[in-house]
Image (cartoon, rainbow, N blue to C red; front, side, top):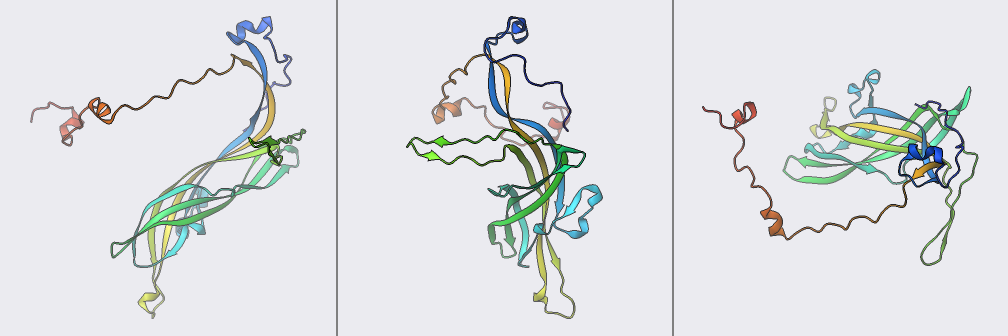
Length: 273
């Protein structure tokens, strides 16, 4: 969380480094003013989501999500290769930034997003249905985070190579950024028997998933900072080319032709029987 600092407006203007700072900045050649997004506050949200209501334990951070419970054909024999393939483009939206009454610069951030999950279904006849899609829709509220409002209104227009002027961006000068790391922890098939008496074909089957998600929420503002510079970046080194396939092969060590023995794990090779 945000901690106040003593930094304010720099007393040094961009240009040549003052003599009293040369020892402090070493080989830096000048002070420059750069415009960058600065992270003012951030927090980490960890969630474990399950598609089986009975497994939910909110007090332990395990929550039920109905999106992780998908009805499938009961001839399915298993779920394989479940994976999170990314955030649905354009799905991340900030719904509200509600300020704390005692400190309007601190806000509760409410946002939504969607994760795209793919999985394969193996049926009892050996066939496989590949790349079935599941959308996980989430709404979260975090905070309070230190998200002060920007006084400046920053807009930019760009001219492409054809000379066409692109319209000015209309992004919020106060940036809320979402970073996600998510993966499918488990995927199973659950069969629910129909009420008796009933037709056995009336059984209902579901694919249920367990997904672990790490969210990092960042509040950023576009600011200008005075920093020491060591000059312009040098040209990058030339890209290395791969050699001929046989040249690369001849430089590689031969593989282990046989699996390691148990003794190799205990004391290393060479132990007498």
